[in-house]
Image (tube, rainbow over all chains, first blue to last red):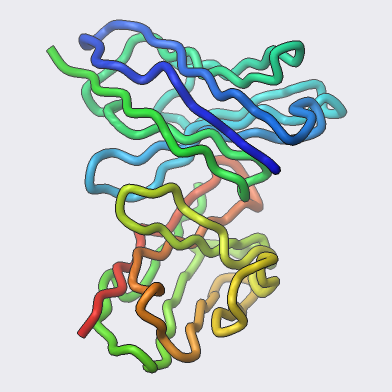
Length: 115
Length: 107
């Protein structure tokens, strides 16, 4: 059974940094494209970024709103995906989901950016 | 960026009704479109991919159609568990973009 479990969400001040983790089980992470999607409170879904699978060299794509501030990485030995978030803004406040193949979603982790 | 416009933004319907939600793309996306259902406090769940392919385990009352720039999600006979928010997602080019959502409420 595919499972994705996000963690690392927290309250952080504007300008701060946070790293989210997504622990994957039930499949081999390196075989799959993985995405991060976020949802601000009471709002719709926004795609954040993607890391492609090993065959495509784990290359990445990002939304313009996070490019240069966020980065996606993997640790295949831990079967885990990460989202490093720097220069956080109040508008980054959201539930962050990791997703396998735009089909299997984790339960999400809440990031709150506020002073 | 490809803009995805959903209509209506909200919809009231009764159990047993047939409902249709439309998603329009600002440029052609072939059939690279998925439909998702989200219930309050839960992660979205994919219902349809490739515009018209039903995800395994999803009831057959859900169907999708369309290609190019106009797509529809149809629920043939609403059940109580179908009241939720629905989103379309285009995945033909980056950035991936979602529609703004359609909230389906009980009349």
